[in-house]
Length: 482
Image 1 (cartoon, rainbow, N blue to C red):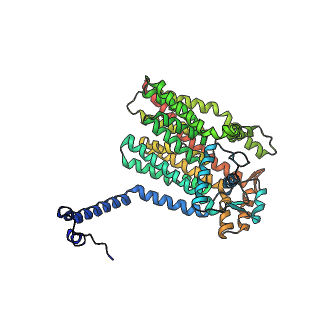
Image 2: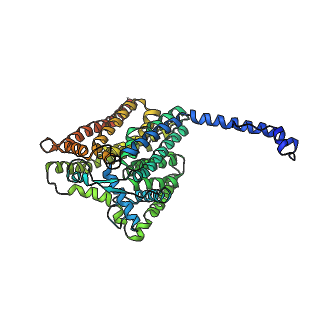
Image 3: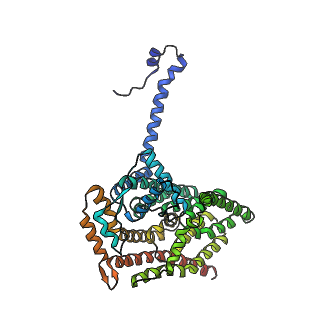
C-alpha cells in the first residue's frame, strides 16, 4: 500500500476534537518533514565519503571472511582462552604485548562471546602439522575460526574508519578544503596496506596510529590534558610513537613560550594519569615488568646465539636497529629544533609536515611493513595538502610496503580456506610453503630472497622521502644565507 500524506481534512474526520488552527497545518508539516529527510538522505549518499566507506568496508569484509594470517591470530586465540580460564593477561603464557592491546582484545572477546555468541576459537589442523617444522616463513597448524577472526577484524575496521575521520577533521579544521579532506580520508581507508593489516594480518598498528593522530589533533586544539593521555596510550600500544615526544614538546614551546611550562605540565599530568590507569591492574598483581616484556624481549634477542648464517643475519638486523638509534635521535632533535624556531604564519601546517618526517625517520632500518601505519596518516596529509611532490614517493612507499607484506603473509593466509571452507587443499598449502623454504642460494631460502628484495625497495622508498625533505631544508638554508 503506498504511503499517503494525511491532509487537514483527513485528520479532522478521525480527530474532530483537534482545533482548526492545528490540524490545518499538520499535513503540510509532515510533507515538508518528509521532503527534508529526503534531501538529507540524498546528500548523505551523494557525499563521496559514504561511497569510500562502502567500498572500503566491502573489500575488508570479503578479504576478512576468507583470508587470515594464522601466525599472529593464534596468539589472539590463546589470550582469549587464558581470559576464559579466569587468568589475567599475564598469568599464563601468550600475552607478549603491553596491556592496552590486551584490554582492547578483552572488550572484543566480551562482545563476541556474550552478544554474538561466538563459541569456537579455532582448531589444530592435523593435516597442516608439517608446517610447524618449516624454518622460513611464519607457519602454524593452529587455525582460528572465521567468526573469531572476524570479531577482531570488525573492530579494527572501525579503528581504520576512526583514523580516516580524524584525518578528515584535521584537514577540514586546518585548511577548510573539503576536497583535500575527502582525498586524505579515502587514501587511508582504501590503502591496501591498511586493509591487509586490519582484515588479513589482524595487527593493531592502526590503533597506535589513531591514538597518536588524536594526540596531535588535541594538542593543536589546545586540549593538553587529553593530548597527553592519548599520547601515553599510543606509546603503550606500540612504542614507536614515543619518538614524537620531542616534536610535541617543541610545538608547545613554539605555540606560546610564556605558557610553555603550564602547557607542558598539563600534558605530562594527563600522560601520567593515563599511565597509572593503564598499569593499575598490573601494579596490583605485580606484573608491571611482564607488561613491558615485549620490548625487553626484542632488545634481548640481539644477543641471542646464532646457529646458522641466516640466524646471524637476522640477529644482525636487530643490531643494525640499535646502531641506527643515535642517527634516529639526531633527526628527532633536529626536527624539534626546527619546530621550536619556526616563526611563520602556519604553525600547525609546519607541525604536521615535521610530524610526518619524525614518525617516518624512526624506521631508518627496514621495518615490518605494518609498522609504517604510524607515519602513514601524516605522510598522506603532507603529500595531499602541503607538498604534492611527496605524492609519488608516498605511492611508492605504499606499494613496496604492500608487496613486502604479501611476501611475509604468503601461503599462511590460506589456512582457513582449507580447514573451514575446503576450497584449498592441505597438499597445495604445504607444497607452496615448501617452495618458500627451498634454498635459493647458499643458506638463503626463496622466502628470505624475496623478503630481502621487497625490503630493499621499501627501504629505498623511506630514504627517498627523507632525502627530499633534507634536500629542501639544505637549499632553503643556503638560500637564506645567500
